[in-house]
Image 1 (tube, rainbow over the protein chains, first blue to last red):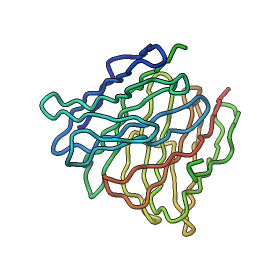
Image 2: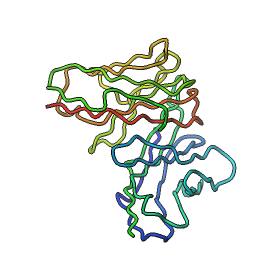
Image 3: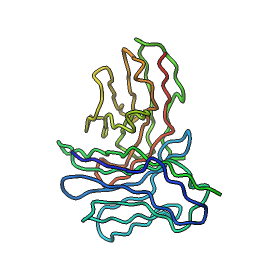
Length: 116
Length: 114
């Protein structure tokens, strides 16, 4: 069965500094990896995905993620954090779950706080 | 705005009761997914429908059921409610059911069981 780990419950970063939100995964076969963001009292918003190809994936709002197969990681990054980036971030992996279906499994989420 | 709508936004009910949550997917999306988000369990996949048929099942209790109608909207039925069912329930939709498809989430229904 597939799984996702987000080792940090909370990440604090100063505005203007680079940020990293960590994610590692476990899956049989090739992973399809996703990052979502959740603002308070809102649904999840899609940020970016890795399917195949270039290990550096660029997404919405200036975010990018680096896929590392040997380390089974998919860390989310941004060169310069904004206060408005403060939110809950979820990493997810989608893998085959039988009978032609693909289940999306989420990590527990990392709360990002950007300090002015 | 993702284009996915969910009603109601909030629902307060008592133990033992039955409720129905409704979801309308984005225009053109054939797949609908239901998730439960709680503090202790995190975000858990419940069930997926594709074009009216059940496609995948996750951690859905037997007291819960869902269906997708011909107009592609979906309903999640929760019965014999317990205190532990209190959670945020999200619906998501995608164009197809393939694993590369990103899912678009609705704003959620917050269920409180007293």
